[in-house]
Image 1 (cartoon, rainbow, N blue to C red):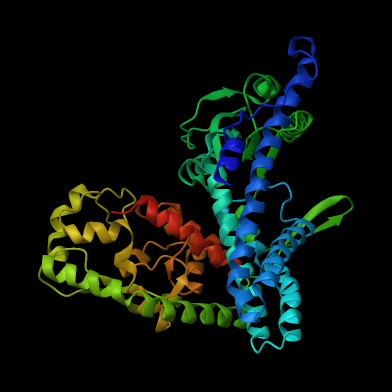
Image 2 (spheres, helix red, strand yellow; image 1 turned 120 degrees about the vertical axis):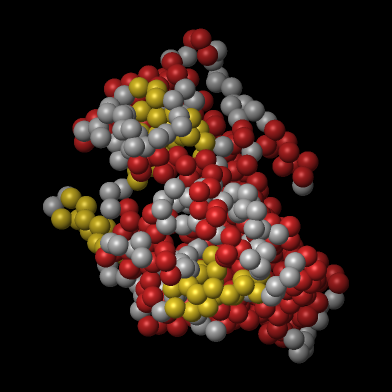
Length: 498
């Protein structure tokens, strides 16, 4: 399997030859052929990997479930083949191999309902076979097959997407239209969060903003877009609050569509769009309905149930790691194992957060003498890249956010959530001057959240507040699961951990 994947990926992206020599072909036709070839090769490789990921997930779930049904070895092998082939066919019918858009590996959580349905469909033949043979575990084997495939398939598919997005020949070269603050934020996120496989290489705009601080070359204005698309290899155009006129932008989008270049637009009022409900039509004009926040009583109960179950299990499973970290802390320096600090909870209610102590015992007393070297220039947070107060053990556990694991205790106690806004220390809450800032206090603070997956301590205070507000305004359980998955690579990368 690995040999086949390597062959798929190592092939040149533009391996499809035109039927006639390039010099005799119409220039636009040759250009469209190259663009289609790159896109077709990318989706072909990804579809192959997704199919193999599904086969592997179904096979593992089947191997676990089949022995419970009491089938003979011959029937088990035949049924295992049926399960894997059937799973791929159902996934195909469910459009799980359709052309992908801007899907990151973590967004596969949205596929769980369809994979769960596929698992339930395939579990019935297994249940029937076990029942006919008089198996006492037919129901258990069917449940294992359904849950196993539903859980393993999204994880395997996430791995396939992550693998493709990291392969340079299969990444998408992106041109940014716009040069303001939003364009700068977009470029920064694409450069630091590689899970989308998008690589910005330049920008165009009619009026260049100075606030954007794009670390990219200016390639021209909107009138130059057709020439830029012809000269440069462009797979996708991202429009981010350009000051160009409406007609100019429409012309630019038509030029991209004529050349089969994908176009994505950062919409106005994007802060509210996670809570959008429906797209209506009024006399041919589209209206996007922005509904009320989703923080209903039932949604709060569902979020709390998820928090309590996962955090309780995690505390039991991680108890050996807790003991090892506690021993390392006590052996290196004097002081308690846990560091407790008052933070602002839901509605601003103060509570004491638990963390593993990562600094020397006199860290708070030495804070005043280090104010001059504070790396945070927002006047709110206190961050130092090479803080002399941090112990050797502290640097290790901070590097991988292990110092925050005791916050699982706060989650069990109902003071925090697994996913939520960053828990602010009380002096930081004084900087929440705007009315909309207070909305971030509508949910319990989280062990992880948008700030964690976006750069941790590298995120300025105002950006962190905005991320938290957008999270609260568009909250959903699916979004929580996506952030939980995205936390793993964010923590392992170590970006912003100091």
